[in-house]
Image (cartoon, rainbow, N blue to C red; front, side, top):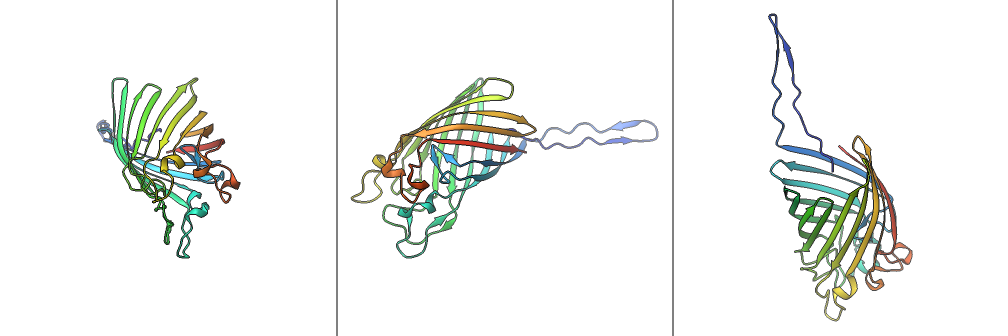
Length: 271
């Protein structure tokens, strides 16, 4: 992500005897950036979050020269509302149309090695009545750690909340992924990714294990084009081996598995 550094303008003062110029002020110890984007659909970890419909997204980031950072990001979603299995048992609808993320951490480099550790909170504002057995509010907390070397990044995200995206008793679930971003020209980058979403626990007595229903591997291959002045465009193909038992429902995505093959095109602007 590009950053925009705030600066203090140098003011030139003139006097009668000779011109006097103020010295450049030191660069600030932090950067503030913002981003907005439009995507043909929101796919996260190989699973469509918007039932193959478009999404508007945006966020903001604060980064200190020490490596400390804070950020927020949001997108429209529909996956929780679309799933009739999440219907309230008390007559009040269970619905969420937004994902709002808050995150913070520390990242730095040692030679060619980069590292990043932090915590990410997913919020899903909405209306919630009595949730069915085995379903909890989708709010999720993960801690993560990543190591990178040049074009390659390996990362693991570990769930510390009781639920993971609405699945109960999922504390200890994790997502391990490997991402490779290969620059092939001045403004073109090839993006490749593989991830393993592992669920732990059992949502309720008598239910199959979360692992048997929800664990899967996802794959992604795409390309990103730097359009200049903060603009970029990306297109990618993604797929998973997600099981129908956990990710297919007649009322969702026209009955297709939400982790099936998807093609995504998006454009974004960073300020």
